[in-house]
Length: 194
Image 1 (cartoon, rainbow, N blue to C red):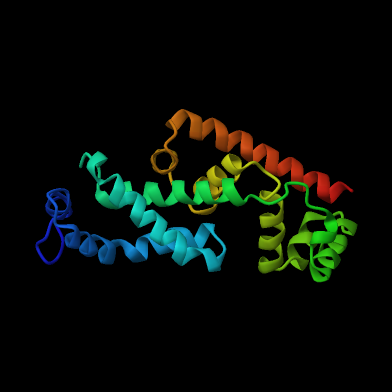
Image 2 (tube, rainbow, N blue to C red):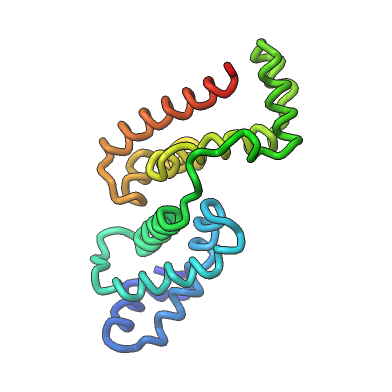
């Protein structure tokens, strides 16, 4: 029940009965949640357009919403899957040469590689630069591996929450996140050992 005393299920029933204008209420209520999900996973210039796609998909499949979980979770799942579809369609070349790093990042990586001690690496590495190196390494993974790592390890979703968002079984999320983490570790070790 909303603070205005309006239940999402009541609004959904109205929309399904033909009151298409009632959908605007859901759009306004959940717009910020959808935008936050998209901002974490997409290039900034794609967020608004993709948000529209999410709400269109949700509207078109509203009749499939069973009401067994919160509408917010159902809509969040559509948002994550739409991000997945976006990257599947626009996924960049997986073979990224070292020259694709900026000069500043190449210098940082060279310095990090020349220092054998992890303590020295951590002291010299800045959070922003480390994040960009991590993003670079994540982009070398498959889309599925990248999504599960981001959800479970970077955003702190439980395995169950991630499975709901991705539409996978909990067991699949556990296995995939474990294997994906190992792949990421290998990518980073290979870079640092060169």
